[in-house]
Image (cartoon, rainbow, N blue to C red; front, side, top):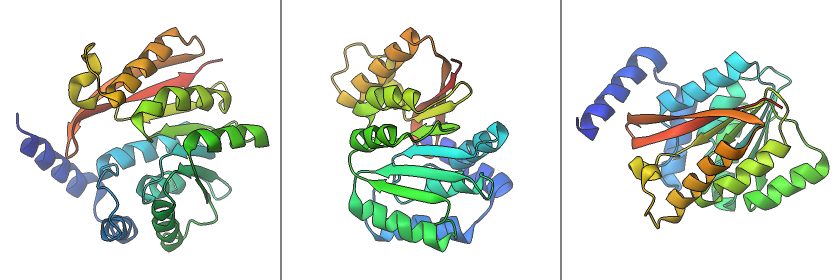
Length: 222
């Protein structure tokens, strides 16, 4: 089955179940105009994240990897009026685009964008006594995912849900001989999950407009 078929199915799902949203469409257009890489979640993926947050009754969210704020807006829309999203972005230019998109969405009061290396921001959050967060979404550089997950655990509580994106890497996750640092990061992440007794987790493979990949869902149990 071809990638075009996967894309066609995504297009059908978006027409039937999601529809057009001027604010979200504008966020994607602004990101493209600013030259941001076209790596945001698809609408179907973003709505899944949104629904996970709603089903979980999340009030506080931590996101690693803001990009242009597309997934950030979806997450913030899932929260109650007194909820909050803390989102971490390395690139200040991306953060400025995200801030403008968040302002346009009318969600600036719910969203706090922190700019700088994710590990530095995570350490700062822990030092400030931030958290625990109800939902954590990890979608930053893939080689750093194991370390991000370890910090995420320290900002969690029993019941926190941690979602990690782009973990299958076009199937290379299963390649023990891979030298790609992003694949190696995801393999170390899975080894960490296997040894971590505080969480129960699974990884789901996906296909769609962004090709063949997958995500991990972990529930903090203690």
